[in-house]
Amino acid sequence: MFKVAQIITAATLVLTLLGCANTPEVEDRDYSGQIIRIYTPDVEQFFYRNYGNFILDQFPGLEIDLIVANDQLKGEERMKEILDASPDLVVSYLPDFDDMARESHLTDLRTLLGEDEFDPSLYADDMIRLMSREGSLYGLSPRVNVFGIFYNKDLLDRKSVSYPTAGMTWHEFLQTLAYLDDGELVAFETNSSPSHLLMGIASTNQWTIIDYRNQEVVLNKSDWLEAIDRIVSLYQSKAIVSLGGNAGKLFLEGKSLFTDAPLSLVDKLNEAQEPIEWGFIPEPVGEENRSESRSVYADRVFSIPVQSENKELSSEIIEAVMSEDGAIYIDGSHTVPNVSTLETHNNDYHGANLELFWQQSMSVPQSILSKTTFSEKFIEEFYVGLEGYLQAAIRNEITPEECYTSIEELVRTAYEKEIQGRN
Image (cartoon, rainbow, N blue to C red; front, side, top):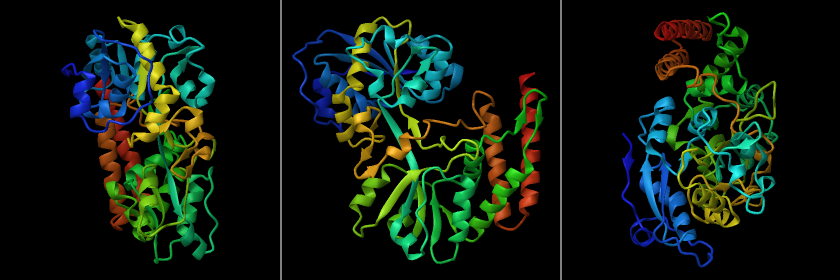
């Protein structure tokens, strides 16, 4: 059951919550006595730090009735929770927004936002595309997450290796890592486990694992085996090292050539006692479509339910968070993510040029193990088994060929259970 936060006034928040940021001067307006019901997946403090403080600053006297989501709910249960809560304004993750838009539960913002107040051409094209359905605009995302590959220019210069470029495929990137695997330095320090690295490659290339028409497993052995063989070999030689949440540590120490990390690593690099000459590019792309990577992700989506009883005020709030003032707040609020979708603010982050990232399609491709297609139980069992087989291969307990065979059988068994569960 969702939790309803206590109604909090702007004055109370200024005194009690951290993360307040200076915001631009606002017109002399008074919203005293008005209450807006907002649904959010964030805990109260994060919501106010990221958006709430700015909203209250822009709408003096406004009170927010904050509805905090039950983080255990997903899919249809999450959508039911939103509808039952009857919020005026919804702040959600992209999958929940997609569900609401698909079921026609959201208002077309073009009917509420006048052309004088909102010009879609001023924002990242892909963000507008993600939020639109058949000519209707059902949501807007003020900021994005940016994730990519950092590389150490000094170390690559020392090895006389050219810098990597945007648009390289996973095959090309893994080949580069193998070439640089000399035992001297870690070639690639990653946030990913072997299983997530393999599935990232599979999803980027949109490899098929199930033929839904014939309901059978159809892994392309040559593709999967080549990737498994390369990953296992690079992990065995320690050319790839997984440090989980500590990824970037070796890179900051000048001990790794590459690392995959969120944009926030830029701040640590700028503050490092030992300066590093570095570059930042989008993650590797698929073989078939080099314009698609998994590097820019929509963050929270603002939308207005059809049943909202306060559409006008809700649309004013969306205009505010999407405005120039909103972008300035994002730039200076030290929150993560902190890249605005407003084009005048989205190409540079503290010295990191992001133009190459915006040339890639946004939030694509989706995982081949989509939660809209497979149950969470199937996905969990698959990843546990996949990681176990890859680790066994890395320890030389099984060969890459045996690892592939085990993965194929894992998919077949798990899918048979999935089908039985649906019947």
